[in-house]
Amino acid sequence: MRMIFALFLAAGIGLAVVAVYMAQGQMAQFQAERDHYAQLQKKFPRLADVVVSKKELKYGERFTPQDLTIVKVQASGVPKGAFSTIVAKQGTPEAKNAAFIEGETRPRAMLRSIEPFEPVLAQKVTNPGVDAGIMANLEPNKRAFTIQVNVATGVSGFLRPGDRVDVYWSGKINGEPVTKLIQPDLDLIAIDQSADADRTAQTQIARTVTAQVSPEQVAALTLAQSTGNLTLSLVGSRDTQQVGKIEIDRNQLLGIQEKQVEKVVAKKVCTIKTRRGSEVIETEIPCTN
Image (cartoon, rainbow, N blue to C red; front, side, top):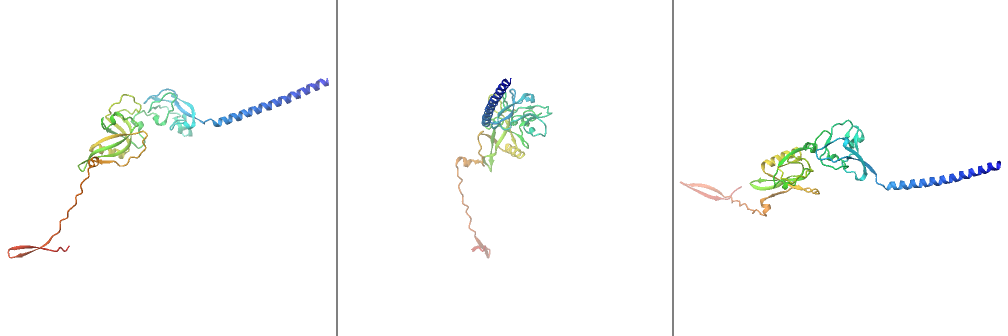
């Protein structure tokens, strides 16, 4: 009996030793896999939350939090102006990057069309309760000013909201025809009555364009429009050069050089008059001053 007990005890101890050995091996394998996955995870790019639209949204279309969702994207590829939260409480750190504030029931509107699951950017949407249009495109302390154009002065109908233009004035200065750059790099926010930058209709000749300007520029453009003709020049999307002073008159255009006329100063003559009887005689004398 004692022999059997001893055999079972020995067998139990042996099994325990084998189990411990196997467990240690398994744990070592788990730790190795964990370290391997940790190393791989360090190589993976960091992800960030980005708010996207669930459906296609056109210019001017309103949307609410129910039309949005969140996807994970590479943190280094998050576009400027993207929202990271759909709804957040007022005053919290998350509110700075939220599409809506908690309790807000007014919808926002699109300023540019987007496709399903495209990021919703702050610069492409209005504030809650504001519809798309000129008011939504105006920056703080800016004014909307309308310039009359035609096929020649309006870049043949190729202008769109969001484009930038240089404004040239043509008129007369001291009776001579002159053209000069008066307002460089103006932002256009509307063409005729449309502020839709995504309009795809056939190119049409605009009658008016509306630019975003300062109050001082309003006064300057009003005077320029009433005293001469304005011409717009489209600025390229990749143009970063600062345009300096530009002014050309007729002589510069045709390469005419004005003749230098020397002024002839008449010699000063001093005389003295004397009377001899009824006759007055004028005699030249040296001038004293």
